[in-house]
Amino acid sequence: MSEETTFFLDGEPIPFTAGQTILQAAHAAGRYIPHLCWHPDYKPHGSCRLCTVSIGGRSVPACATQASEGLEVANRTPELDDARRMLLQMLFVEGNHFCPSCEKSGQCLLQATAYELGMMGPHFDHFYPNRPVDASHPDVLLDFNRCILCSLCEQASARDGKFVFVMGGRGMRGRKVIINSASGRLADTDFALTDRAANVCPVGVILKKRVGFSVPYGQRRYDRAPVSVAQAQEASRE
Image 1 (cartoon, helix red, strand yellow):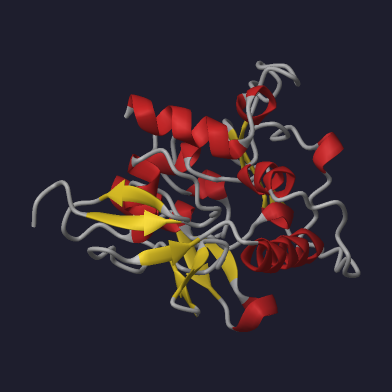
Image 2 (image 1 turned 60 degrees about the vertical axis):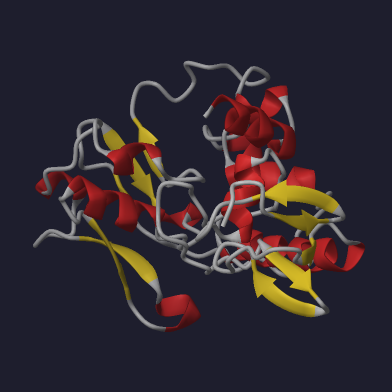
């Protein structure tokens, strides 16, 4: 298959190479498909469903669907964006995402995606979960109240060869990230700031101590440009 092979995303041709998914090819081409749990360095997880697109009227996850020649993919339609806003609202009420007081504000993919899709409010009743905060590590704070179960920390830590983070539990409310130590505390692992897992969290769960506000509000990643523009700019530099 030649490198000029293309599919169509909202009517625009997107080049792809054999084995690329729709989301991988769109990202490489600087085209934005909303997503939360997908990261270009890791295996697709398919849990957030934000990247759902439509092919011939059938809904499929763009992160796990391979591109093929001539495919017609609908992405930013009113119907798909409506469904995405509802998924975002569910994520916001299932956790404690108090954006004005979160030090990840302006760098948070969940917040930026909500802005991108025009989410104006949570719609559903808040759960206000009471999940643990782990401040035991000298360099990192963990606030699981903001976890969206993307599993990126688990994959990144496995790539680090440390397996500090593990997905455990059952069911929507029982599913959670577990710290892989006898005490369950991050301080009792060999986790380090240089780990891939220290920099992969798309929301405000894994926070580095003493650097939280080194970049002031208004100058952060998604303060400067909407997520669709920011990611396209970053893809062009990769």
